[in-house]
Image (cartoon, rainbow, N blue to C red; front, top):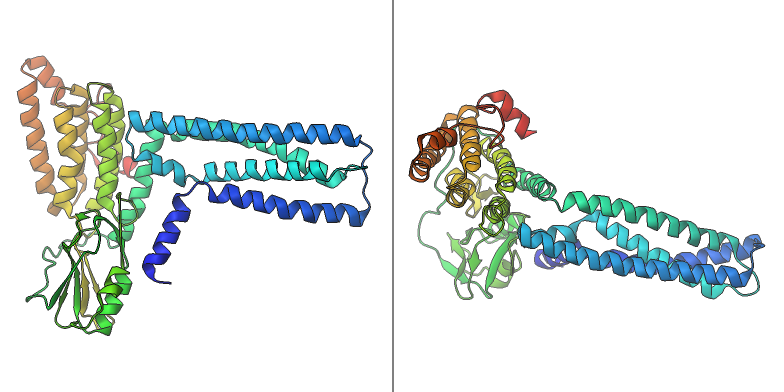
Length: 431
């Protein structure tokens, strides 16, 4: 199986909500046979009336089926509301949520097990099977209450933002594994003209790539491979996808195609900029006139602050893979510091240009990052701080309002001015 096939299977399983429930049903069919055989081998018999037991198990099975329908319908409605209020990108997070999958799997198991036990009751009630069915129903109802509590917290703006930021930190640390050491390689271009250019065989967004596999291919054919689009970029059919340098004339294009995944929508797996995109979209939706929720935007800035610090403390000169001899075999573009800072600040500053709360929170973030990050990271931050000052001057002609908007406030409005201007406040956000 190629890397691309494994990636597609892994992504489908991770993003599918039906697989675990179906597995729960199959497990229930196996379990009921095992437990029924154990009842017969042990010679256990219950004193309960078989007719009453059949009726009770039928009611429990019907209740579990109703519960599954209710949870599924409520989940779809909650996703629609959350996507309308926050961003449509949150739908994928719900389908990946392990607790939701486990709950549906438990409900499917209990429904199938109770129904299977019911049809097996004849002259006597198998006690072990009946008890497992009954207690599974009780466990399912308890887990249902826990699921409601979990989804209620998960689908709130703070819950979604925290989940996205946590996933984002994992992506950042995988794409940029080394801590900042004071200097970075800005040029990732390959010297010379390409021997050949491999065009994309389909249109879509570059989702992920097999960096090790491409480097091994380059080593095998003694060449250098360049992935032209950045992960997260849209590439149209017949546009350059790979360039091959210094050899590799006989490198099969099919092997290259099997090392990159192209799909319809960006994912978080290898795309750190997409994390910022999701959070900025949530902030922008909160700042829209239709919703007018600047506090949600402040919560988003909290997480952007956390992520910018994490990016700023890492070496961003990755984008190449070397062979064991130290020769560069794979080159690919990655976003750098000058990409992350405007992405995190520009749209929020523009959409929140009339909000004193947003201006104060952005200033607190920029002031804190300027004081806590290495000197090499400061020019883009100072540029954004200057742009923020000009925006405040333009949209707040009243001196009193301008004075409020020019203050630094970690809460936007209501916090202590300059609360995050020192390193202590910054460390508290980074945790």
